[in-house]
Every structure is written in C-alpha cells, then in structure tokens.
Image (tube, rainbow, N blue to C red; front, side):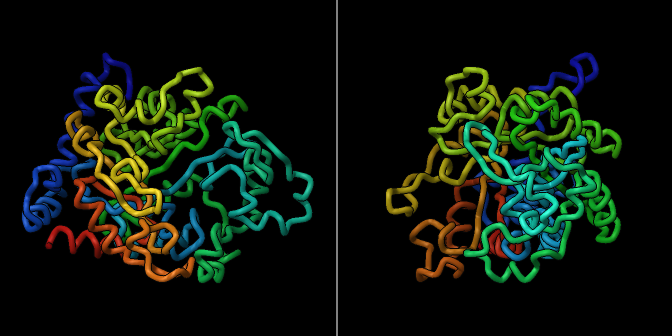
Length: 388
C-alpha cells in the first residue's frame, strides 16, 4: 500500500476487508449449506475480494492436472473448468529483467531446454535458498531466448496424459498474463482473477533482480494495483509481502510451508522464527498488520499421522479468522500420491482417489478457499458442500 498520509490505517483496512471476505460466504458463521450457498451467490455485490464465492476455487498454476503448468493452455482451461481465480503465475525474472511464469527459476523440468544444443553451456549448479540445484535458470536467459523454448509436463509419472501437450505452449510473461486477463474478462463477461506469487525474492534481490518493484510497476501500468483490483499477490517470504504492502494496494497473502520450516528471508537475516511461530495468535496478528490472508499447506489445517492419513484439526482456521485473515490452503490434487492415505484408491501413481471426500473434509474446517490442480473437481466439491 502507499504511505500512511495517502490512506487510512493499513492494519484496520486490511483486517476489515478480510473479515468481510470470509464473512461473505458464511463459512465462519456456522450457517447451513443453503445459507452458505446464498452467501456465496450474494457475495458478488460487494466488489473486490468480497465478490469471490466462498470457498474460493483457485486454479493452481492453471489447470495443471490436465495441461503443463503455467501455460496459457493451463490458465485457459482453469477458467473453462470454473476456477474463480487462476494462479497465473509464479514469477521469476529473466536476465534482462522481464518477469515470466515458471514454478521455479530452474527450467530443466518444465521446458524442453535440454533439447536445445545452443543452450547446453548454460547448464550450471547454483545454491537456491540453501539448496544446491543443477539445471538451467531463467536469470541466465534473455526473454527472447526463453521464448524459443516450449513447456513440458513437470510430473509425467503422475500425469502421463499431460505429456500429449508437451511442446505446445511457450513460457508466458507476466505482462502477457495481465493482457490475457483483460481479454478473458471481456470475452466471458465476468471478471477474471489472478493470484501471482513472487518466487525466491531474497535470492533474486541479491542478483540485482528485485521482484516486488517489477511486479508493482506492471500492475500500476495496467491499473491493477488497487485494493479492489482482481490480482491477489502471494509469497513464502513475509518480507516480500511487507515490501509489496508499501508499493501496491492489492490483497496480499503470506504462504506458509511446514511448521518446522523457516522462510528463507528469515534464514538470511537471522530471524530464528519458524512457520510454527507465525501461526500462533501473536504471529497471525503480526501478519494481519500487512496482509489479508495466509496460504498454509493443508497439513497446517489438519495434521497427518505417520501413515499419511488425517489426524487432528488445528486451531489455525479459527485463529486466523479471529484476526481477520482469510485462509487459502494448498494444494488439492486428484491423484493418489497427493491425497491423505484414507482417500487413496488402489496403488497406481496416476490413478484418482476419493478427491471429493478429501475436499469435503477440508471445506468442513471453514477454510475460505483452496488451491487445486483440478478446478472442475473443486467446483463440484464446493457445490456438494454448500448445498449439502
């Protein structure tokens, strides 16, 4: 957000809007399914985040259960399947400072770069957030060079059918995504929402490729840096969200990994806190001072036993709602290996388990939305939940 003299107090505004968000769908009011459905339908009158149905179905990297992730094929299909918001995209920079959509800066697993002999000498090993990583990195390519590559399926063992589409789509830029968003909004007669993420912001800032300023500049140029703009920004690094909070007015979300992990910006600056500290009432109050939501891993909402089955529901949903934060956990996928053990069916790594059963269990916790690779499954599961 901008300076304090331009706006009312940020903490109060964000908390208030957050409260309106999760209140709109009735998820935390303990209403019946019918009342929740009515709430979701009437939510559209408020504008901004309040216009989204609750629980919100967020297309994770598009419709990555069916198409190679972070491609326009994947993004387009997510909308066709009914996603309320499309996670377009995970933002990483090129050598010449453009933002592109890739799950990671290392692109050996998501593009056909290995098939390009002219780029063989770009293969290298780097330390990315403390982890030695070998491959090809976006920051070593110009945008023009990246545009000669094509996307491929990241997890072919789980999604062999998606390999049919290998080589079909190029790597999108964030600017292209913003234009696509406007085109789709016009074509569909309905506001299209996106949910981009700053990836490894501390790592890139050290390379002189700061992400937040580039994101803010593009959003400003496209008139999408306002409180009610249909662009939600997210990051695993709290300081990236704090930086964005000073640059734009968009809704902001702090992503949270496993409880025993530390955000990389905390590691770099010697902050000893872990995610477990961030999800205490005190930690959540602090987050609510500069963000409107959290994106926890599903295991922070319901813990798992050693055998991979669900164990205990935590107090995270209630604690977050108490300070006005919405929760958009990640990631629901239909395939067996990604589901809690009791919802798996058979042993095939690419076979679907009882995804509807798992969605129902997670929706029942009162979460405000969920990231899913299978937006159509999520939309049907939501209908079951709000009408059940």
